[in-house]
Length: 244
Ligand code: SF4
Ligand code: SF4
Ligand code: SF4
Image (cartoon, rainbow, N blue to C red; front, side):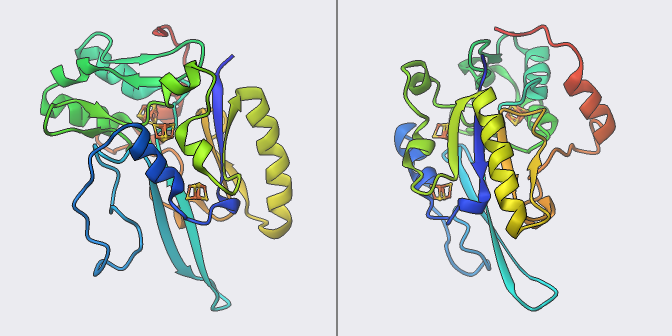
């Protein structure tokens, strides 16, 4: 039975506990960052080889003049049919693998054998713009679903660290039921509340506002140079035979 996350943004306070826990567990190096003079508290400014998780901040004024702040704990969605796997493995065998038991999509050390252009193609094939290349060793990087932890029956580090119940993890069926329940609650306060691409991903986001008011990558989109959205979704849903 695959595992899944539910990320309930209605409960996210942007404390960044999950972001820090991810760096700590994965022993990722610090980044030199700039917290000021770019108009946002988002830090670092983007995902990178040392940040598999990033709280994206989006601030906007509503029609009634109220300022609204949306927080989006961005990470790999562990797609049900991952386009990154198809693209990467087209060049290098087992550069990306998908664990049949949990659904975790994992970038292996083999990704270092992709040249810069091929690695960029993998990045562009991701409908959520997640993969980043580690320029030091050439490997592609992203969230691992904390594979060692979940294999030992533990929660992913980011879920364990979250103090508000925004981050949730468990059996896919359980998360789907929780998503339905939380959505019904959220809709009472936020009529536009929705689940982002719930059938296509194993990291389901509950949004309380339009996706574009969270982040450019809150829902699936693809680079114009590769596939249009219709082709992409058709590709996602076709039978998948490359499970590990
Ligand atoms: S979100 Fe992107 S990197 Fe993650 S599994 Fe899907 S295609 Fe791959
Ligand atoms: S599951 Fe693990 S690797 Fe993925 S974002 Fe959470 S802490 Fe980071
Ligand atoms: S730990 Fe929870 S509340 Fe804090 S930023 Fe992450 S998801 Fe939001």
